[in-house]
Length: 478
Image (cartoon, rainbow, N blue to C red; front, top):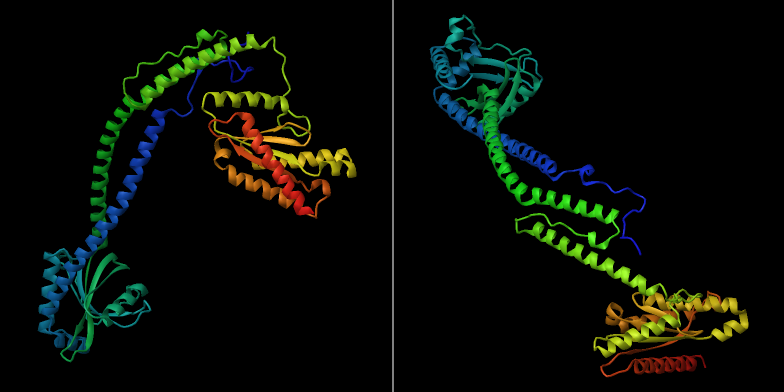
């Protein structure tokens, strides 16, 4: 009496209580949900910040462009140019000073000023013309005359480059400046006198931090909304997943582990009973549980059949079905195969073809080089035969006779395979670089089963085709 099949006969069966899952679905789901939410927040945050930042820059650029254009309309260009040339302040200059001071107090702008760009070195790179002061600065006594005051090192080289670029350009140019006054978003427009000559650059600054803070504020609001929506959606999805996937899988895993323990520790086939858990999801998991239950029943029936077969085969003598020289099946095995084919013919389920092969030149090899090389010749020819019909049963039914039973895939491609066999022997037999006992050659014939045929009819036709092939090869060598 044999025992039940075991995965590892030396390993002690693990109890369900001691079984631990390395990566539980629940934990994996939670980690992936957190990762997904974090990834979405990072991606959306980046896009949101970039979008809001660009929108704010564009909005401020348009806003400051309007301020500059209105201010330009208030400037007496020739008078301002004369003030720069003489270094003296005119009534029109004072009126302009009062106007830009009022803009700073009433509008969302940090500075409004005019300069004359001189160079791009960062040292005395600009000459001040006029600058706004807020009412707080006037009250604190922080006002000071700025006409024709050189910038010294207060205007770094990168700012000087942008100033010169704006001075030489057309229309409003906006850029970020970093100086002793901090980081500002600057818009600048060149000033022209009545002769159309450039003489100064009008600039307006706002705090760059304001743009960044606006972008961050909108970004954080967006991320907060996404997190709330993701947590709600994740919770709802988790509840659905737990009910329809995680909990049923856990129940199924517990029962399957107990069933495996029974398989590993019992010898009675009737103990192979899978207790199907109560899964009411009506999805693939419920179907899987049902199929496992059927599989357990089939396994129980299979093990019982093994017990019965063992009792029937104990008194039988084991027959050798393998040819000792070539390793393929022998004539005894072919007799079993013949009975199988005849049974299939009787049941009208047969679909096969026979290929009969007879090795050419074996007697010459034996007589000339000895039977040791003759055996090597047989083995090589058999190998060619097996390499072609790799999915078919091959039998050695005589000293130099072989037969292959083609079914399924090899039967579907029988004509192509038979041509491959002929080509293989043609190449091998004509390869003069090899020893004579390694130039394998054989004659072969093929016949397929036709309704109404007996097995001997199929064999007879294949045998006749083989002899025709052998005769044709002999004629080629004459």
